[in-house]
Image 1 (cartoon, one colour):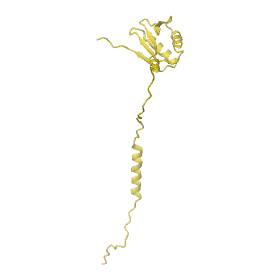
Image 2 (tube, one colour):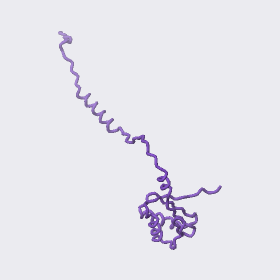
Image 3 (cartoon, helix red, strand yellow):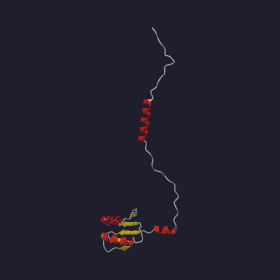
Image 4 (cartoon, helix red, strand yellow):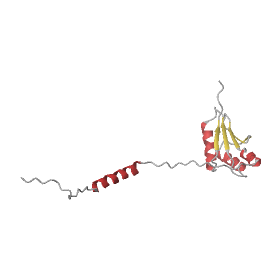
Length: 138
């Protein structure tokens, strides 16, 4: 029997192809499953406003709705409860630029009056609208 031992001259080859495939699969998995945070918080210093601009920012248009559903624009009662009258009154108040609108409705007023006021304000393209409420007295 002739037993041959391993000779030092034999090369041991390791096939790297499957190893590279596994590394690429892991890379693709982590790239696909990673979420990127797109929000950024910029720290900026805003300019200060003069006092004349601050007084203009406090100006607003007030729309009041009483318990009967009548409209008041800047404390002036409108003769009609129709949306056309409210629209005309708001257009007269908006002659010097877009102002924020505050809608105050009585708790006993019809809901349709509030919806009409909000609809007219939306049709005029006013985006700064707020509905004023009061806290109940306890």
